Length: 317
Image (cartoon, helix red, strand yellow):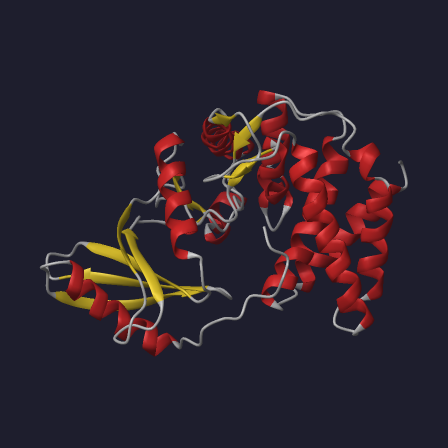
C-alpha cells in the first residue's frame, strides 16, 4: 500500500447525482424515478438511484485514480466468502468525456449503519451480545479464507506478516515526521508513534501463522442493521488484503464499537495473541495517521483516544 496523499477528482453532490442518472440509463433498460445523494468521504461519493419499478441501486463514484479495479475486486471476493450479506457489484464504468469519474453500481441494501441505530445502544445486554455474536461470526467467516502468502488480495507476495506490515508502518512513521516538520500534524502524535515503533519487535513478537482475508474497515459505520435492529450486511471494505486477522479488529474499538464489546466477543470466541491489546493500540494509531496522510483530513475525536491508548499501553512495555 502506498503511503502518500491521494489527489481527489473534484465532484460536487449535484454532479454525482447527474452522472448517476447517466450511468444508470446506460447500463439498465429501466426508467429512473428518483435520485438521492447518500454521502461520501474523501475519495468516494454514493448516489441511490430508484427506478420506476421501485427497485434501487447504488452508484459509487471513486475520486482517485486506480481505485476501481481494486475496490470492485475486493468487494466481489469478500462477498463470495462472507456469511453476512455484502452488496453485489452490478456493473463497472471507467471515466470518459460524458462521466469523468470512475464508478460502479452495486446492490442497494435496505437498512442503516449501526452507528445511527440509537435504540441498540440502550438495548439489553443480551440483545447487544446477540448482535455482537453475529458480527464476529460474519467477520470470522472471512478470516477462514486464507492464502499461502500475505499481501494484496490480488497479488499476495510476502512470506510473513512482518515482511508485509513492518515496511508499511515504517513508511507511515517517516511520512508523519515529514508532516510534523511542516507543522501539519501535532508533534505529540509523532512522538507517540516513534516510541511505539521502538517497541515494534516486542509488540509483534508472536508470529502470525495464517494469512487471512480481511475486510479492512469493519466499524459501526460499515455494519448495516434493519428496522428490527438485527444485523443486515457489511459494506465498504477498504485496503482488504491477506493479513493478520487481528488487523481487522482494531476498528471494533473505534467510535461506538466498545458499547457492543465487539473486540472482546471476538477474542472470547476465536482467541487472540498475547499482545492483542498492544497490537490494537499500534494498528489503530498508525492506521488513523495513514488515513490522514492519504486524505489530509484529521478527525480529532478519533485521533486523541488512539494517542492516549497507545501511551497507556507503552507504560507497560
